[in-house]
Image (cartoon, rainbow, N blue to C red):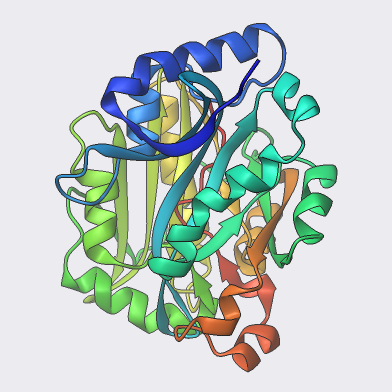
Length: 334
């Protein structure tokens, strides 16, 4: 039997076959993290580029049959106060039967990202699903970027029901404006790396899609924004998909989390706090009863440091990775 392997970006016409592939792989107990519904897939992988017919998702085919897939989530962030554009690779998978018979498919498929890395000059990050996969990447020029931790709110009983901060006011918003841009600029030194810090991109991500169910709460002290939190409700569950604060006021973390818990309780939905890497956030949340459920290793492609004008290598290797902040990072929650 002749094979003809090819990888290309997924179009709207391919959504049906792609969802069928994800369901078949789940039925065969091969994988369970791929989006099983079209609306979940669209929400996660829609492109921020106007007019594009493609999703941020590659499909690997043998002739016309889908045998693998790999998505990516773009980000527009900051590193050492300088702008940094990149992507986080997610939902990478190849049919185990093909993977066993054709081990060369893995590097072949990985080259799908080369255009994003070399032509578009995007900084690539990836979070392998296990230690074995992590070691596979480390053998081919990938290195450790940082660790990300999933925290659970299930034991957060220490949050007082009357937790308040008289000097801080809270309000819901439906759009990020220039005040938020000033906020990111002010806190850049506290975080070293911020995954999402571009106002136009954040407005597209959280407010432009009519299908989204995000609620955004902003904390203000005087005339300055000192933090915000974004919660997404999905059926009977809710996720904190983004929380960022001015760390001169660490109690704002607890204030925002408490109000998110209150919001979820009023709507009878369960809340799981999201994914964090910044040590100050984690320390504060542990003190009020949150617990670490999972540790995820995040890797970056080392070769990008050779040509990237956005990153100075000495600053990159000397920076404190415990102060990297993965706001807006919610992997594989389906």
